[in-house]
Length: 56
Image: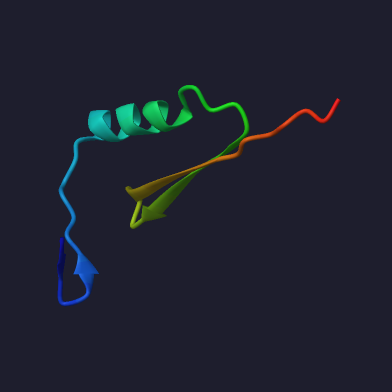
């Protein structure tokens, strides 16, 4: 959802943020998890996962 070109945000507890970070890390073999912080608060979590193929 967006209003006036901005995304709608929902407030979360610290425990929910920690769970979201652990969920983003769970099962990832190759890739990265980026945590975006504004004013000492986590505002976004991005997970980038790569698939690698063995050529042998």
